[in-house]
Image (cartoon, rainbow, N blue to C red; front, side, top):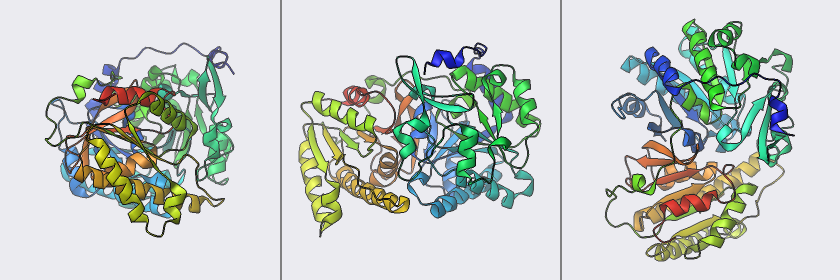
Length: 483
């Protein structure tokens, strides 16, 4: 299906500057707390704090931070809930909300909440938004939300929503329904429809019928802030609202409408893809970081020449990107973590220790590509498949942690949502970091750790489902001293 055909009968997008949205957002003094179900939600933003722990003192640090002379308008919290079962995911969401509210109250701050999830509709919905709303209500009965706004669009990565149908760009001006892509067949979070009202009905097991979902189509989004606010004024009792989005201007138009609705008293909880927060707080789209910006000469001593590229995701685009990187980066050493061997090993740690020794030797003079075997090991049971994924991720983390302590690499790239989350929080022991910006236009985030053994090591969070076949190669080339 041609994207141009989808858009033929809609009005042209408005032109809205990020400064207009930023001025409106900053005037409220409100800070958004983004519960990120894997770390790839940060790829669209820059100069914002990110936490991998959520004690009150962690929020106190983030809320008191100044970057470029201003308090950040959003704080990311890496919950990694997409790797958890439903019960643990709900508990983690409640913990984050409770701690954030306590810290905000002490700081005299007004905060709002964002449930950031996958732009291809995978994740714990409605569990996470339910848990956030229930926790807010328990803390303060007047804080119950009126609307749960669903905005999965991610134009930088080719995901758009038109007529409440969520699409993926497939090339040559064509789009396909996300329900017709490999992502809909996810072993844990699969779905049968990408028509958002029907998706909501499916995921809520009929608790929320499709005809109770409010749609903001492109006619609404491209009209005025007042019109959007008027439509949202009718919402109550956590009504689900889905928004059509194609461009960054659409997101900014929605942001102004939300500001008007919320200023009038509406309480909105956001369930969104990565670029929403950028538009909501009025950040401009940042140009990709350059080598000179990344390596400023203040890296700690003892760094090896080689960087570490860790690939865990099994989606098709990741496998193609890995193939392109290994074909083009001839000087890199390649180490495979064979999942069946690891799962069947009598002494798993002994097997992993041999990989660590090989990687450490190689890093002294070359980049090292560590990847899990490409045949995905899973079962017909969603929870069992998730447990296998967690065990594999734990193995990757164990390897990375020993490397960062023994042979600190020039940089670390982690490919895949669960992989990059676990590598950050446990492999590199990052607790607090600053998101510096993207490595490619609108995608692939670079974190600067402010604590732990990874302090000074550029860490690149690379989602499994973004970029073209050459993207991993391009990012590695920017960072590498041996490519």
